[in-house]
Image (cartoon, chains in turn green, red):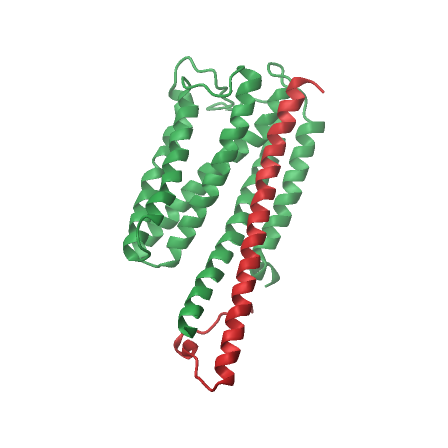
Length: 227
Length: 66
């Protein structure tokens, strides 16, 4: 019962533990990468954050689909909150990716890399979601438009994810192939801890943000009733 | 500290900074909600004191934690 009523607190505590553990292991336990040396350690935050952004956008699209399917208004707020979280993790992906590019390639950004450009397109697409949402009056029309838009964006996720494998002459490293993760067992373990941490962090932020938005909406209703 | 170490530390600090910024923004939001609740509670108390029946009766009952 406590867990159900304090989901946000439980998720935030678990995320803090996992991330603290994962980052400590990444800095002090895993060996240096043969090719990239110490700088490869950005991998343990950059890739989990990017996968979490995909997961948030995917979750937002799923909630959008539920809205269109069932017409239940609560899914609109859930979809919007998930997209909101996805954009936050998208910003983190772009910033950490740029830092990694600076060390490895000597540039902050490379327009020739399809993986990077497609992620930027995905990020900008979902950033425009907010402009669309706030350019229309609240109501069923806005809910449906937002849901359709969130669903369209999800198509870009597999394209962005697979771009690296389809691209030729890329310099962005491919770590996960059909033969499994191309890294040592200890590295993969730390990656999994960090991924669990970022996913739980996104879950905690999502739960708290959603709670805040619901309280806000209830207060508005109460204000109207008292007016 | 080598250049690589500086960049790696910066990447992790950026993530930490964004999460902390989010917490700060959320704290402001919670403070605003608290002010709203206080204002509405005061308004409801005034209505009750003046004998007016609030329209809240027609609204959906508030869901409690338990």
